[in-house]
Image (cartoon, rainbow, N blue to C red; front, side, top):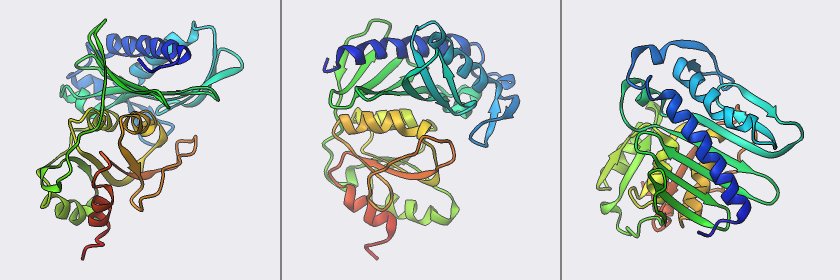
Length: 275
């Protein structure tokens, strides 16, 4: 592993958080009551009962960790735990809420932990118990099972557009852009969990990820962006600029990520530069 000792400790903490979420939500997955409205979340979207349960479970291991944390989470917004914060956490306790409510096995917990010394991105596929993680400057990895073997991951080497498999999201004003892109690639999928789809890109299962809805928040993508970058991929906005997201719930963005080999070409097609 290329992780520092500090990153390994933080990865173990993330494992505890993910296990806590997994145990908390597993009996609710696929049940109609899991979609009961609880409150409006800090991001301005409805919080469902399974979201609140997942968030409470994710935060529980932090309370006894003995370190101060500042947390930005999708449902509760910003809070501090344990005194003077040593780490800042961006948390999406359940990415893929609709999938979980419907019993579709594609949902995750996304955690990004940082301080001045260390930045760690961590995403757990809760349905399959596969963990993806990476440290800035330390590489990206996949781990399966309770004590599974840890493997380094790398983006695909696909370099011909017609062979690309892409995960894509859009809204009506931009649907023609995705249709145009779809005519030139092998296939387009929409899987329903942004952080997990970014990890599929990092692991070479997808060749690109495109979201033109303009609604992604820092908690949605902070962990996945780091993992993609450490796996050799490229992440940008629709103009090809590096994404710098503020530490709040109100900034929203588009996102384009790829294996880096045809990133400019994909951006050009999305913007209509080739017409």
